[in-house]
Image (tube, rainbow, N blue to C red):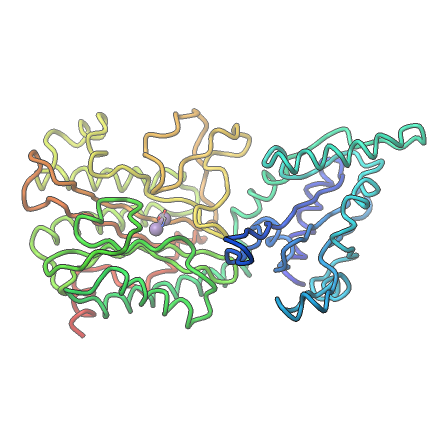
Length: 457
Ligand code: GLY
Ligand code: MN
Ligand code: MN
């Protein structure tokens, strides 16, 4: 069975367990860039998870009751004139057959059909409160249903957040997703290897970015999963550096955080290596600390562990390393307690990975309030948000998360001169398995010896 169809059945089961109703999800709109040029189109992840249908202007609807469920796709009708300019539109009939829906209808009939579908149904399931225009549209549909009250028609009395249900489903990847993510990870690892081979003093960061993009695209990836970070020397201390314009100097490190998206699934890899192929003493000293932190965090990534355990394990190694090399003074317990290590390690060690690079899914046990969602690894300070007190999520096989410790030493008078402007991160993608975890990005080397040997070759 098509994986998307299986997911629709699973969603229907969950809806049924709560009395059924009507679920719907829109795909993403097209976005104009200027005049008649658009930004590259990328469908909505939730919609695609349930359909696999790639065209814009589409909605999936599930109508579920105790005994049955019906899946309906609304999509664009065929249009020869537009197809001459923009390519094939499957049209409802072919889309229904190809994507395994029970029924299909023209997108243009959505506002007319939805009140009929909602009539006498107990509940609505949609991305509640995520978009004002959507809420207004739903309001109109419900108004149209209520207008038939005298005929005895009843409008849904309850609404559920469809995303919360799909977030739980997306958090644990199915076989189809795992196969795609493994392949995305392999392509991205090959791209990092290509970048290590290409880098030389005198190159520009964007030339190395071009090597990454070349490797992504030649292997069938549709796009990068996020803006590639190619950061030489001190630029590596800017966590979201994205200029990629500087020249690589002899003696500097190059930090690359880049991953491709393949068939809707992200990969996310960081490697840090010397532009001239040889780590200096101080670079190597910090690099070995980060690598040991990563290995320790990977060991802590196993079923039954809490989401935060790999982070806590990495922090202990990093903080001890910072003390040993003179970046910090005091005891391990002291620098962890005071948070002093955050000056050089200010993000979390991982985030969920899937259709989105910072994927959906609650970082706390289900049932936690929505505000308990933890920050993505490299976008939000580790101290955010305030602790909700809810237990961290327990890892189970099929979850995918990144493991990405780092050390970033911005130049300052009070840090040892040898370490100033060094930024290092090592990031891999871990699939939680029954036995522990599988590093699906392992093709890209991380050890000093392996990196130096690859660059010599
Ligand atoms: N590339 C984004 C991140 O590592 O979180
Ligand atoms: Mn990441
Ligand atoms: Mn990354």
